[in-house]
Amino acid sequence: MERRFDATAKTEKELQALQLEGLKWTVNHAYNGSDHYRKKFDKAGVKPADIKTLKDIRKLPFTTSKDLQEGYPFPLLSVPMEKVVRIHASSGTTGKRKVLCYTAKDVDDWAEMFARCYSYADCTIEDRIQIAVGYGVWTAGWGFQNGCERFGAMSIPIGPGNTDMQCQFLEDFGTTAMCCTASMGLLMAEEINNRGLRGKIALKKMIFGSERASEAMRTRISELSGVSYDQLYDIPGMTELYGPGTGLDCRYHKGIHYWADYYILEILNPDTLEPVPPGEMGEMVVTTLKKEAAPLIRYRTRDLTKLITEECPCGSVMPMHDRLLGRSDDMFIFRAVNIYPSHIDQILSNIKDVGSEYQIVLFRKDKGGKDHMTIRVERAHDVHHSHDSDKHMRKAVEHDIKKQIMVSCDVEIEDYGSLPRSERKTKRVFDNRD
Image (cartoon, rainbow, N blue to C red):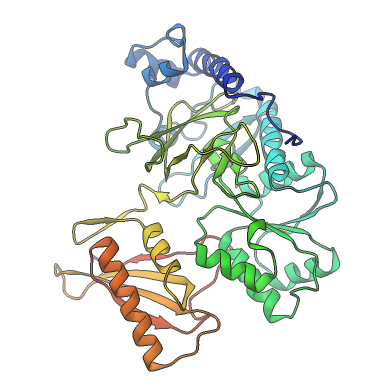
């Protein structure tokens, strides 16, 4: 199937040839343009000429967020400063913000990648795309905006929040696609339902970035908004790797097609840093192939996912990884068990009458005492409060958590809509232990 903005490579062999060319260029560019990379390569005993095949990527040293923090304010810079036309930064929730520089070509490449995302979501130039993500120094708004303009559709750059204006724009401007976090998507779906807009507006697609959306959450968004479940798309991305737009799941939703002509993706065991077999979960490690200002070489993202080897019915040569399952540093330890919020998310999604919103609260009743975990879950929208149904739901959650994660927890059942909604990422884990 021909898509606008797709890769020039039509076969896996052609794609690998592009990757090898890009890998050689990146290593040479970084070695000659960056004191940081040159020192790192010299310490590892590797030179650009040592990269002869794609397998030689394993000779290269890793890059981490620590390299970005230590190189602040312009880390990994591999071009003269006069070639830098833009900077973007992460939200900086821990330590210094991660600041990345962009050349004009970097900005152009990013727009091209993002335009491909809209194409894979079966958008057309007739679409009217409401962009409800943050603008400013963050990559989100600029990424969605530039990609939309490159693609050729109408952009409605409203930013996050302000549900009154969001709903007014949906009605007045005939918005057909909305880009937002999954949490914002749920908030908007509830507003669409509460205001009686379902079936009266033109909205037919939603593209979610920035956070994982559970199956229960996606189902609820579809039910409330009237947008077909198969028209809800996931878009990954991070500031270090241009920003959002580095891949998208197509309408078949078999996995996230990632743009392997712009970066190489390795899935490694986060402890041993050795490759994991396809289908097994590991940490995403990325190496850019065209990035000029701040190339990434074996950058440890801390994001956890797995490669998907089955072919997608859409016929794309672009390989796939699973939705992001969480981050290696999102994991918390409870009574000597390593737990990822995404695992609890999956368990709750499969329990009847449980809604899509939840919180995990960790605490100790006494200083130095035993850890306790309480999971607060909402009833589904159409489930009414009753002692028997709440008791059954509570026991079902406790049983499935114990069976699948091997830990005990307490469960509190909340009214639908009582847990906080957010136009940004929703906080799920509250660790109140000393």
